[in-house]
Length: 399
RNA sequence: GCAGAGGUGGCCGAGCGGUUAAUGGCGUCAGACUGUAAAUCUGAUGACGAAAGUCUACGGCGGUUCGAAUCCGUCCCUCUGCACCA
Image (tube, rainbow, N blue to C red):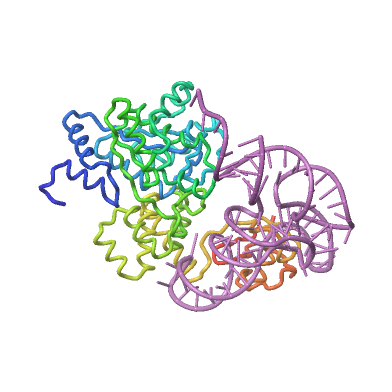
């Protein structure tokens, strides 16, 4: 790092790592400077959706950035979107969501916090519920808020434009969503708002509404979207292509190994702190080794170095060398003969058709011997090891 | 309100009286190969059943028919155009 850099420039540089877009850089520079002079920390906002308390690596990208702000001395302001959750963010798949009770939201928020503070500094975090202000607005307030934005402006938003073009429904309340989120910024007087690039529109509305309310507009930082396990679509819970930050080390490592090679670069830059030059070097070498390094790096962040090494060893043992895993789920079975298909149904909780299919496809072995007849009678014995496909194992235990 | 187009399996999307548990694509799973739970290729993919077969499924309900996702009636929902437009 350039020793001549001022602390502010230094901070700016760290904040923009990983392809972060800053709107605008000059304003952020200003705010950082003012904060340094007055000793007043910046209020950095991040909105959370209370319906999905499982934090994954994609969201962690943003959380890590928020953590960086905290490390620079600023305050994190989390907005639990208990009110907006009733609308459902049109950025996503836009299914109407069930209304959550306050109790459910608080329960979710608790689960959320356990995970959040694996990344964030709790002592510099303030949590808000946007129902506290949005829920109190009366219809006149809503009309006044709605008057601050035009239909044409709202329709600039890509989601709406696309859905209109595809002749898909766009409900009126959905176009209120960006206004709600913008109002949150007004309420907490945010200096900065973080989000994925998919939040660009919403976050910019916040700037607009703050200006309309006589506040200084928030600076917006947009992080690139992390792709999911499929390597194309964004990582999200609803698409089922995510890696949760509290998943078991082995599971996490395995999922990372299943990423398409092409996704590695963005994972390295967004999910690890490895310097650019080293990333280039890793990617120039064998992809499998690079991916193992990636896996170890990420697992270590959430579970520690030791767990990461263990996860890698277990992976190499089970998949590279095809040996059986150290630990496998035990399944209790009462003694007595049963058919191979029935055994599978019990051990792996699958349907009869699926069990037959697995056996028919040669996917099943019992103590290393392939089963090829689903009607074959088996007398289960303690310690028998059943394997289905590459990953699923069960150890039989007689009741 | 009027007119037109639609609502099909996890998703997209064919079918438009029987051979349709329903083409195809995506997804998922498996096998082969390998460099990995990468890539590629191949296959499988409603439930129950040892099997024969039975059941459930094409927005809801009712009807016609030996037989309906396919025809008729009705209701609900979406889209497009027109009308309405303080």
